[in-house]
Amino acid sequence: CRSVAPVIDDEFAKKLSFEDVAELRKMIEGRIQREYDALSRVRLKRDLLDALAEQVGFEAPQGMVDQEFEQIWQRLEAARKDNQLDEDDKDKDETTLRADYRGIAERRVKLGLALAEIGRANGIVVTPDELTRAKRAEAARYPGQETQMMEFFRKYPQAENALRGPIFEEKVVDFVLELD
Image (tube, rainbow, N blue to C red; front, top):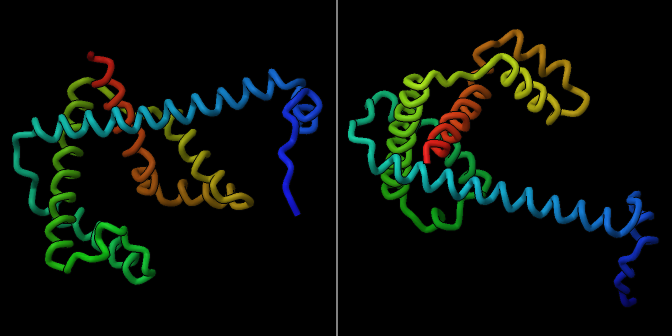
């Protein structure tokens, strides 16, 4: 039982609902470009946040760090229970893990506060349209339950904050990147 690679021609493209092989190729190139752009953005954002973290010269409020650490630790404990710890963490003892993740929590809080201040100082806000699009996108992740998800957001407005935060962060990152 040997597999045979198909001939990539107009006939093959038509079987995939494309007009011709040129249209198929254009779609594939577009998808590859979008994936490359997304990965480039992730790398650029990481570099920006690393640079910002080096510049942050204030102590993170301990209560906020504790709260962030507890959220991280709960996810780590769930991953440990499901035997899905990251490879880097599997051989670490609990003291080392706690120290590592407390450092991550402190970094997140500092960066969150710094980004919030940059956004506030520059009038960056999440618009109602952006929030509505995010709610619809989140609801679409639950096929057949979109209406229930939208109702959930209406009943629990605080759930919008889980969507508002990442949108705001992306807008502040865009603002900072455009400064160059």
